[in-house]
Length: 549
View: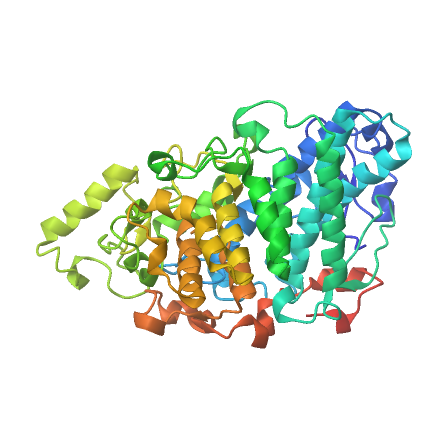
């Protein structure tokens, strides 16, 4: 593998990484023990896992040295899925952490960008750590125990997660391509230098590997201890529900509808739907009943102005948000029934207080909202929003701004958890899978618990055809999972482009969005596929210029 990928050395709840470069391999960090010692006991292997848990959300150089302070891993990768497809709408010109450049499709389409390089770097580091545990346990001679199986289950799940993430970003979508021949990503099974990998495997081969790893994980978990502890920290550990949830995602993305439906049901077992007050509370903690998996961000590992909520939550006290409040597509918001409480998190009538707003309509002098007939009313509405949501004086407001994602301590830079998987997603997966099997009644039954819990007037009989129900199901995906990063993969699975101008417009500024204002659907536009980092092509003897996407 590339010299960008690192070998594990273990330290207390942290994994300093040894580079593949020979001069660095000759030195051992004084605060680290050898990889062999990391496998000497179940307790040490758990420390390796703890390091991977932290590596999901740390600034990339902290746990996986060699990265960059400009990305805090899943803090960036999760909302990126909605940033790329215009779900998370920018209202002003702010480019901290290249967030605007990513929105304009000037990051993942460039092989030398940090976005392409660090996502690749991060996911392969997860694979290396998983390989260390999987290979080490296989050769260790340890007696099989429930604790050992729990570690093995998490290692297989992590490897499956990383490969699925890689192939869904750096390969063509399974359902819109030819997976048996489309190039995927290199397979890597080694855990020791020189980290040689195969050339790019096909999309199908990567999907097969993900399936094998998830099946192995589920078997191990069935003989494991189950999650330890309780509360937000326990949900940072992977378990059998997470493996089933990833299998549901894997199956949905490849059109294995029966597996997707069954796995989704298994994944959500024990994770009841949120009630209204919990859904409206801000999605800042793993303790929410629906959360199957998420990173528990400890205070000592805060990422400050690299956080998910810095990029996506309008309560965060950072310039990316203060100057550029994030809004929702007004076509989505306007379609929310008054009986659906999820509409409460969007403020279509919020005054446009930003005189630098991208649409040129900021400030009282440019006000066009007939609700505000005087400047005093305009200012009072701004003050009321700031007071209700804990914003500071520098925060701007904007029509259709959201407050779905809210910090536990609004108006601060305090860390919050990063949620990866909720049971709501599993209801949506089951419903979509059944609809794709031409089971309209079954799809309605699958969606009903979720939709009726959110909307007191929801009526399954309102959708008489598969096409009308599919349109409604897409609406439910977009509303329920708004801001949680599902937009990019949904667009690829549904083969949908981006069109901010259609049907009355999204509210995004064409001047600001530039080439990403209208984007052809994935099946005819290869720009949906992330570029392979040029540094990887330069360093990996199994890749050449012809391998570039």
